[in-house]
Amino acid sequence: MFFYVSKILWLFVQPLNLAIILLLAGLLAALVGRKRLFATGSVLAFLVLGLSAWTSLGAVMLNPLEERFPRPALPERVDGIIVLGGGMESAINFVRSGYELNASGDRMVEAAVLALRFPTAKVVISGGPIAMVREDEGDAATAPRLFTALGVTADRLVLEGKSRNTYENAVFTKQLITPKPGETWLLVTSAFHMPRAKALFDKAGFPTVPWPVDYRTSGKEGIGLFRTDANEALQTTTIATREWIGLIAYWLSGRIDRPFPAPDVGPGG
Image (tube, rainbow, N blue to C red; front, side):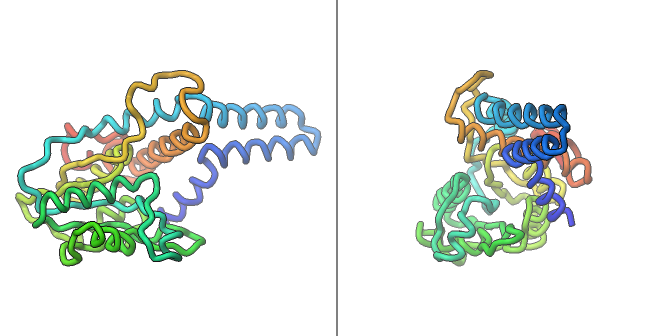
């Protein structure tokens, strides 16, 4: 239920959709003579789109998430590498049977690099189909084609293909692996996603070393207008909004212990 509620809620609150909904509400208000509501809806729609696409708001929101878990020194021994899904073009790969990467494809590339550096480490690929309407292929089904093409043998891969969100990534991976005391497992995911992912794995009782990748900010953007391409700025704001909402929702539902997990606290973030 949580998965479906979160998907439906996100359809309404992501910046572009929210602006369209506000504009539509304003137009409907104008049709029935409610000029004040029309003006309010139009102004709010403009503010949502303008702030998201023309300012550095998204980068300012995203950077604290990316800085929360700095990448540590690489351990001398690694028993396993966990890479979370979200880096593959699932709908395209479902049809074309390839391994096309999306903007978060660094997750898969870095996991493959780590796998080659630590040739005895297991590689867990966690991610099932997540689309509610279209047909797609989970990353756990796609990624083996990429990993084997890059020289990681299939016998090292552990596939967790049921999870649809980060909570299920953590729970199902723990059930599949049952890590032993003293083992070192790297957790590979996007830097902005690491606070939520690390907290969920801690809560599930699976100790991991965070290994963030796929950075979207430099930390030097500052507050200003027209700092980057409008499409890129809108995408960054969308990612930041989704991640902050995800953190609050997971905290309120009891899935994580703090709304902004940090590396200097105990299990649960």
